[in-house]
Amino acid sequence: MIRVAFCSEDEQYIDAHFARSSNIIIYEFAPSSFYKVGILSFKSKGIKDNNPKEILEHQDYEREDEEKRLLERIEAVKGCSILYCSQIGGPAVTRLMQHNVFPLKTQGEMRIDEAAQRLHQMFINNPPHWLQNKF
Image 1 (spheres, rainbow, N blue to C red):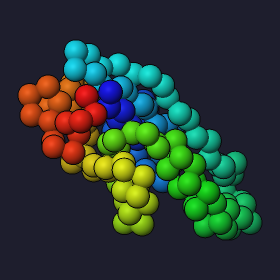
Image 2: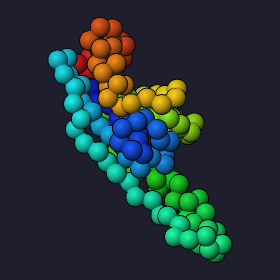
Image 3: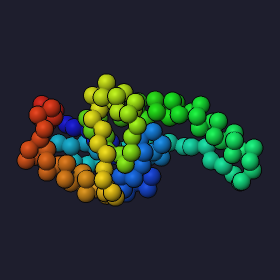
Image 4: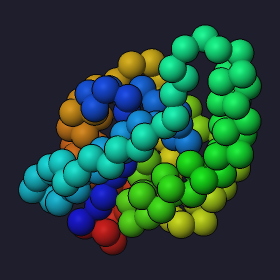
């Protein structure tokens, strides 16, 4: 069994930066099938109006909270072999690789269901050597 995570804002497309994604959708792949096993949602602090003080507080919160958000998402994808996202920073890549999670950045818009279908075909026809023993 192979687990794959997809970063998404709308739960349809791989359209989110890993550390800022609102949702991480988890799929499991077996030789004969694949299926969605869950959606992990992350809340973010929003700005209620254009109050300059609130904007500054929000920016401070974002800087202070960046590490926490990254750790939450890394914890959420532990046990996955692959992570799809639209963007990811170098330090996050390093940390994911330490947990045996291989991050992949998509080029342009890609639907999660299409990516899952392509992955399943690759796993069946020509899996990478580092994933062969997981099926």
